[in-house]
Amino acid sequence: MNNTYKPKATYFISLTLMITILIGIAYGAFLRKIEVDCMSGAQYEYSGESGKATLSIYNSSQNINQRTESFMESIRYEVEPNEGLSNGDIVHVTADYDESIAEQYNFQPVNVEVDIEVSGLPDQYKSVQEIEPEYLDNVYEESEQYVVNHATEIFDYKIQRVDAHPELEEQETVYRAFLKSNRSGISDRILSIQKLTYSSRGNTYTFYYSVFVPGINTSKDIVLQDIYGEVASVTNDEINDSLYDHYVSRVYGLRYVIEPIEIK
Image (cartoon, rainbow, N blue to C red):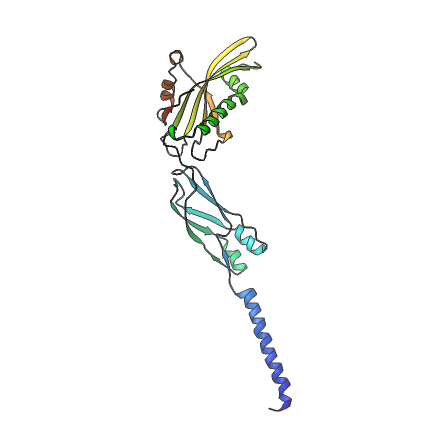
């Protein structure tokens, strides 16, 4: 080959290599689809007990790459089915994402749909005999503390006296029961009926008050803000003959299976 053509050949070869490299870079940066896992960073939160639960999903992914993070924040998850879930159920999860963001950043979403098995849900107790004594003791303690914490409000609601400045002199638990719900969506609970004695401006007042601790299940959690109470409209005959079970059956028998608990 004529030596005068060698520099030109070298130049064209170098130019071709450079163009090839630039095309490769352009493809990698702008044309090649980048896979993004839609389930990466997905957090599963169950609400309810086994047999009555629902599932919500949110994405907690925090990526250094702002474009990826922007895409992940656009994802919304759909769950089917999503009611009455029990441990062992299989649910189908679909990720809905902003297609315009995916197109803008040349993303290829993957794992858009997955099946997951429901697990970790607390179970209901079949009867009060299954409930751990320590758990029950904690429930009883919180029931009594609820009255102490709301003593003035309870008195004001029942007696309807303004500026009475009541003092809770005595509280006695006269009845306890495990109320097992027979309706979907209603949790089991422990009921305590307490005899409350107040003094106010030289007078003594005695009445009965029911305290409920809902959400009784194998999680053994006691959610304090869910505890509630109401005045127990016990009749004189029921009080005189200690027929508190009669009162509870009369008022709550249609909604719950009632298991009395011995007071020791």
